[in-house]
Length: 178
Image (tube, rainbow, N blue to C red; front, side, top):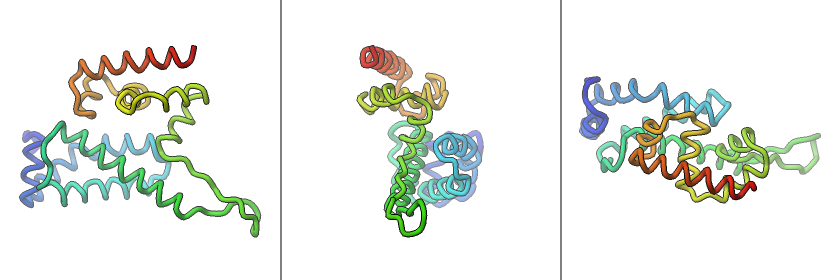
């Protein structure tokens, strides 16, 4: 079953094929865990996100339309789950400091956490001013260290589009920082 393409695996999963699900999981869970760990330091949360992502695959495979690559869809599902987890954490703020103080903890989103840890404030502001499609390409190629080909597969874009957007994003960053 490992020689079957992702699209065919999704079709089979949509029909309830457990072996196809196992094959898709074996093929994609390792890289998904690595990418999630780059954005989340909590290994338990990463395990939960992986489980929720593949639970979504099982439930939604029949409705998967096949636009773009399956890896891009998987990553989109995982990132949405991570963002949801961060929002839930923010909805339940915990107090910090000594008991009785009313100082609430602020927790940035997963994306903000990565950006803030990797760049200074000026660069972070410039990155946030980029169009989302340009920022996504930089995220994939610079922060995640993916090749143009890998980023193209992940984002569901032609390689030429990834290259063009990366050049445009770098040019806009240079202009914003000069």
